[in-house]
Image 1 (tube, helix red, strand yellow):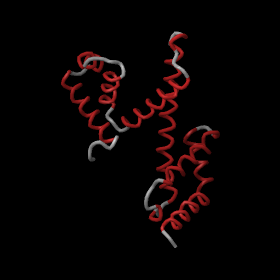
Image 2: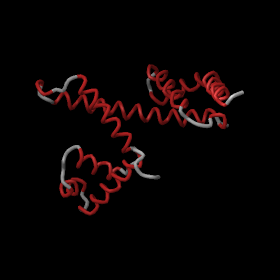
Image 3: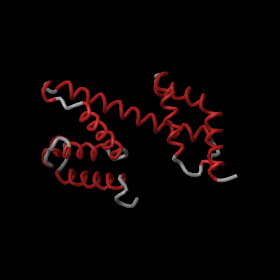
Image 4: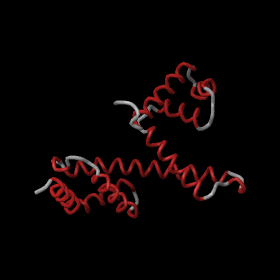
Length: 171
């Protein structure tokens, strides 16, 4: 049997044996039955891109770990969409971007959130204050209650983190 055929068998077996369990788990985690099926589907889509599936020994633990990441991404995306909707609601009617531009901005924000995932809270905040709100390092230091030197360190950490996340630097 070819490697691809074995891989397809593993995926089929995971889906057949654990899909219902995963949907129930996601209903509890997400708190919404309507999203559980979509989140389960997203979990299996992520698994399609994973190498060495035939080495999985604890299928439910593996699925739960992947599903947790899917739920975190879903929550992050929902928060971004909510914040974006609030921003749009506050804009004067004649300055609201087109639907296409809104979608582009929302997707860009989601990509930024993924890049900043795992970054220390203060470094992330400093980065966003500088890059999105245009604050100077001195203003950020005042906002965060830290020294300008700390802000410089936060910015360097954020830039290194983003470059690594984007694959521009080695791990």
